[in-house]
Length: 290
Image 1 (tube, helix red, strand yellow):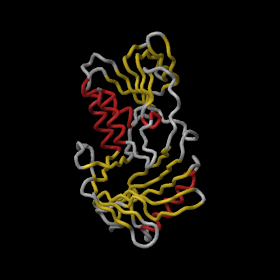
Image 2: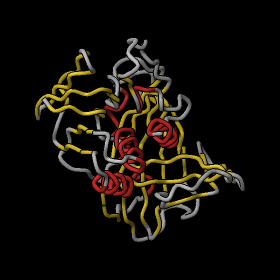
Image 3: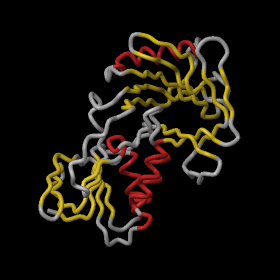
Image 4: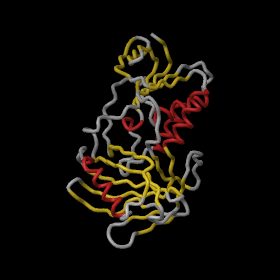
């Protein structure tokens, strides 16, 4: 059984962020292992967040907007700010940056294709049973998401596609954060349209609902959105992404063991009002690593 100082369960946003920030200050004396069941990383996420003028700049931000719009019927309502920006970090940029820093660091391992089957408290720490063998960890940070069928006030389900078009399908400088807002049998529905430059766009169909099964009709809603935005169907699909975010997630009671903590969505990183979590996770990972 291999002994390590810290087991990070899950190599998503929270797990990779923590490992990356530990890598920045680790002297090689601490042994840290990240267990991630996926075999490889793909550009499967887009993280957006609000940044104030006086905040430290995130070097991974690839797009920034100082105006955004909403629409229900008729003309859209545009908002502008000189004090804040809406920022975008792509999954591919985040993964590449985090993995490179982790791989260069001594004492930190990222194990892909390895799933954690059980964690048991024992003398000296925790026995972490994985598909690649057993580990003895002094501490555990568990970033696995909670069950999506319980614990949330409301759910945000979305499905999107990044496309390349022959012509502009919106204002290239103004993202539509909540467009064509309406209600149907699934809940509160809207389109999300981000201009990514050079006739590239991210188009998503989104549903807010207290029902965790609200996303079952998202493929049809996304296709309807594309038909409405691009009636001639003249576009090329570059990639797809989808997800479910529990908003207003009620954190379970702590089990009393301060050396086994939850992080990411299960640790309360998601803002209940919007679903944004990226900036909160970055602040947490820097503080936790320190």
